[in-house]
Amino acid sequence: MKKAYRKAACLLLCICLFSFSACLRQGMPRKLSAKAQEEKIQIGVTFDSFIIERWQRDRDVFVAAAQELGAQVNVQNTNGDMKEQIAQIDYFIQKGMDVIVVVMVASDEDRRGLVDAVGRAQKAGIPVVAYDRLILDANVDLYISFDNGQVGRLMGEHMREHLGGEGEILQVCGPLADYNVPQVMAGFDQAVRGEKLKVVKTEYAKSWLAETGFTATAAYLSQYPPPGGIMAGNDSIAGNVIRALSEQRLAGKVCVVGQDADLDACQRIAEGTQCMTVYKPVEKLARRAAEMSVALAKGEPLDVQGRMDDGTYEVPYECLEPEAVTRENMDEVITGKYHEESDIYLNVRKQGR
Image 1 (cartoon, rainbow, N blue to C red):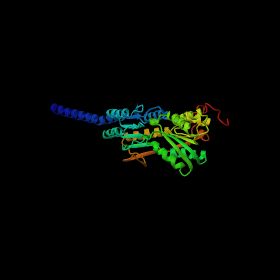
Image 2 (spheres, rainbow, N blue to C red; image 1 turned 120 degrees about the horizontal axis):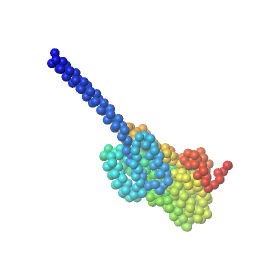
Image 3 (cartoon, rainbow, N blue to C red; image 1 turned 90 degrees about the vertical axis):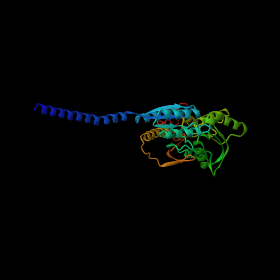
Image 4 (cartoon, rainbow, N blue to C red; image 1 turned 45 degrees about the vertical axis):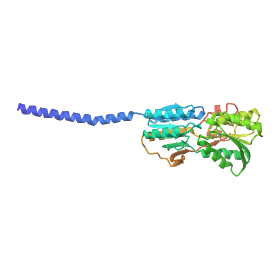
């Protein structure tokens, strides 16, 4: 009996140990899964520079939105150096980022190295997002930007209306190395085509050097009568255009248009020295980019209807709409939403109040 009892006891003990072991084995995967879920998505972002006011806002909104979605963001600044941007992408690859977001350097340098870097990231299984600026021939996983053709059309439509459909126009555009620039120029041309408006000279600001607005305008005024209007590639360039006009006491007499809705541009519109700017809701762009970057990191399909030809491939294109801003609709579009009233009207007393 004792021997039988010992056998039964041993059998019971073995059963208990086996059951306990099985419970542990069943519990372990759930514990590991929970740990895996705690690991944050890693997003690497390489910016052209932060000289342009809006890029700082893009950065802040993108980082905040990504963090809300449980991701960590590593932001790098190239200071306008293409080779540095390539090195930063390689650094992100080595760090095993889940997604890489690129605000391409607007440089005249050969972009082949950048295209190759994008290819290395994708080969490593890392999706690449082209933010605001399309990387030509790179076949990125997503291009997200504004309708740049519409940006140009809004500029041209305002110029046409302000000048009554006739007059000479000077253009001081951004660099052609930024693919947005030819799109904006095409939209502008479309808006003024068929009118008695004539673009008499076009200059390009290399690497978006804002000072080009001053030098190009001053050089033009030294040789020709003032144009009816000046199309500036962005508001930083527009500010320098107006500085050159001011030296000739022409500020407010020449229609100047720009884009980005920078604070100083909104102040100039309130003062009457700049006619209009194009507001591109960067908060929406940055937040949407963060959401889509996280989706790419998770391997989720993107709900993107648009496509953009990058010169070699048709890439997914998420497009947001811009909006014209003038003195008449400043409060409706900008005040309290993008800039504060006290800042916009810092230098002038608001009309009607």
